[in-house]
Image (tube, rainbow, N blue to C red):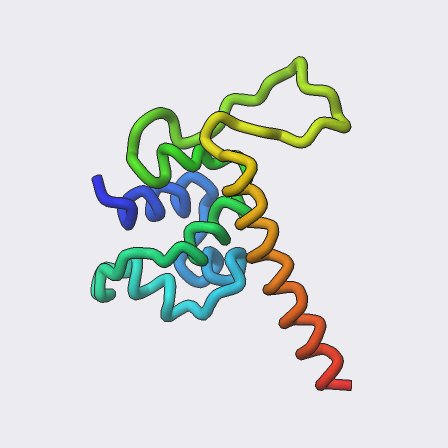
Length: 118
């Protein structure tokens, strides 16, 4: 199974069509269509796209998404204290920093766009 097929599984598991998936990830619908569409190009998702999936669906197992190994969803740990940050064996601190950096850059762009619209 390809990563493209696993992305379709994510969409199905969360009851999203391609347009809803695009909105959730804050990407243009064409990007999603080119990755998962029946008549799309079958493009492989970029690092940024995968980061957006991981950020938008925090219950998705990153190892499964990338390799197909393991379960699609992460197991919840009841013993986790509410103030603790969730750290899974699938994400290293560096990967978490990269994800947060990507999110930070996206938020900065959105802030700049909002400033320009005023």
